[in-house]
Image 1: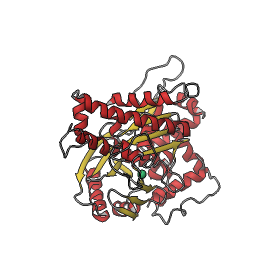
Image 2: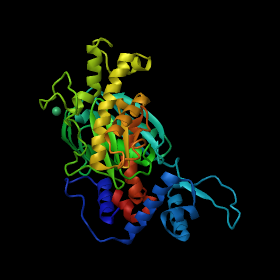
Image 3: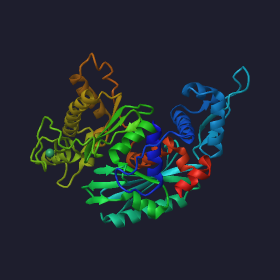
Image 4: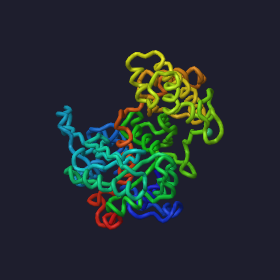
Length: 428
Ligand SMILES: [Zn+2]
């Protein structure tokens, strides 16, 4: 992480946005940047490996024990770290007192804007779900939906005795995290709406937004199935399809914030419905939940108004035809996954959405991909594809992860006590 990047994040989290290009001004590294990077490194290591004795922490991150002791003391005073229960004397010298991320002083709120409902959740600094509320919004208009979400955030904050460090928000479609703008959310009909700025204005809290696939990738990276993995793909196949990329530990949005769009990836097979691009072989048309449900209806497996959930229920109950439909979809996803793996050579691919609902279908994705991949280059193909770590709570937790990612990268920006007067002013 460079200091330039860190500075960009500070401004992004603390101030209203002016435009897509106005937020990343390079400047020389300053002492505060280095301290902030050290705070960030310590918190990151503890998130992944804590609790750790300070000596072990120092070894793990290549810092002196003295420096680690000083920095962890400041983080503990600020409420970000806690002393873990004593591990007992180690035999030589002082007993090792492990430190860990404090899970009870602070939390972050995640907000996911779906088609029918807004999900609001509170997660702690280790990403654990504390509370979650689903509220139908009854309308898709931007203003009322965001007002409703802000009210839900305030209720959530009032119901828990933790300091709220900020709000992470996610939705489907084209979301530009850098500008805080939802460029296009086709399902909700939102275009060019300043989501981060609106929420920030209503709540007076730092707000960071991102697309739901990148949010999911971040959640897996920080505290899910890809914990500590710095190069990963999160492939989401549900009502919508798309991939979220994390490269070198950072989300990769692309030049226009649209990286990972797989809607029109041509795949083998044809949908009964035509894509808006004219083809019947687009990934979203052939592999999406809607197509699985359509085919199940066509085969008379489910009622005329039946949905993907009905297919999943049938399959879980042992219906062979429903299982075959889901397996076929999983194999198709497996072939597409092999293409993504060859193209980007990730450490791990996490599969989420409807395709991962029955766990054995992730195995089908994996086996199909393995059969296509070069056995020499991809010797680890058997473990390269994993299911998402989050069940039905994935999208809410992932929205929170968008903010948590920013907190872990720049803790001083979010916790004034850590930074002293300078950062306190920046947040206000
Ligand atoms: Zn298409």
